[in-house]
Length: 323
Ligand code: ATP
Ligand code: MG
Image (tube, rainbow, N blue to C red; front, side, top):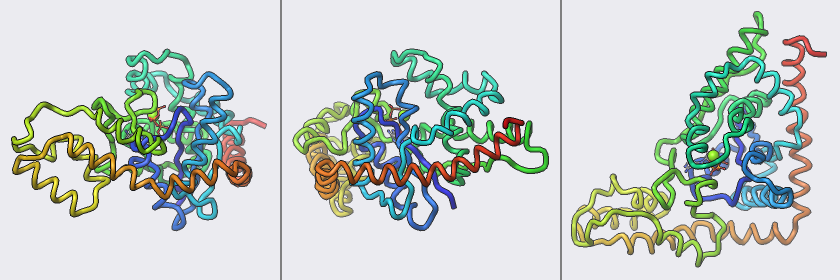
């Protein structure tokens, strides 16, 4: 199967990105034909400084490699190293009804959070459709927030196939791959954890900073001695994703019995997060000390991705009468 997914270099990666997406990237590589990219065209809607964007792109590449993405098993590349993406995006834009984009929740959410309502943000799902269709993807591992965009990708592909395809199909229809237990990781303030909401726990923050941030996680005011429902507690929801099974069972039992405070859970969660990423932190430091290794992976990935993209773009151009 062809797997494809991307992450925006719009800020430091957080545990929501890791649990909701990156972990699945890693399990799906190897057995499948996987393509993963740093979505720098997408980040142009939020990062407006060239040096910052370049740094974030490097950081996401280094983060992914440190976390276990293996360039021998998957193609790791940067979106703008494949400019074919933008041409396909225009072909798709030309068959996308405005109404489909107007109903997108993610756009409306971001505008409501005060992010400027620019055309790039509005048209984001079409660029995303181009990213996915350009690689003939079968399966797209993402968080729940991307489900609607995946539906639009399928709709746009079907529409293009219908308008131009005749009997032969131009684009393959992709399916989302969303795991229920990690579909929406909550941020410190209870909203979806998002780079653009300043509510994140960053994967590669200093251990001290991680411990401190976790302390800010919003909880209700149930007293320590009162029994609590672990299934209704977002803090426990996160704890159980990081804790060893015996710690998880112990904390769950004490929730139900009463006698555990949120402070203790936060402290233990902080430790568990720091421990989970300890090895990756060392690998990351190595890569930062040797940026040429990251540059090599990027160049090799661009070449492979571009070869695949060119073939699909040619198919699309031919179908609609360009060239
Ligand atoms: P931005 O705020 O700039 O949109 P983001 O934090 O939402 O950044 P993206 O780069 O948009 O991160 O998303 C990368 C991947 O991580 C996507 O597959 C997305 O669905 C997933 N993801 C992002 N946030 C979460 C979350 N809180 N829970 C689960 N998955 C998430
Ligand atoms: Mg996002």
